[in-house]
Length: 168
Image (tube, rainbow, N blue to C red):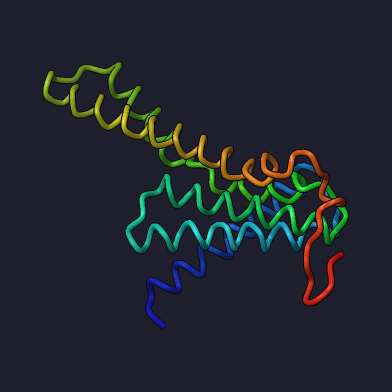
């Protein structure tokens, strides 16, 4: 197995563990921790694979968050808990901390003594990182919200989800 794929697999595992940590922090029922782990792992894997194959980090985050949102509705139906119990802890590990951190470092650098040429490059990098963080946060919110917006008139209990040949 290629080392790149091992790193992708490792990131998938860490997405799941981070989601479990946030689930515990939010005091979710114990029976929901395994599905939260799996949702975060699948959503994180989607994001990482799309970025690996050249998709932008913003679009990849939207795809991962959308998958988490859709699967959390199905999981909520099966585990008898609200979909937000599954989707919110699972999507939090995809929050763009590195871009926000680089943006704050850029602001700190801008307050120091910098030459005009350095100033414009630092300002460009700071704004770039800030906009990436902002758009990723927006796509995470939209991605998780998509299934809730599409099914807003029905609760997860009222949705008809086909299992094999029968409908539950």
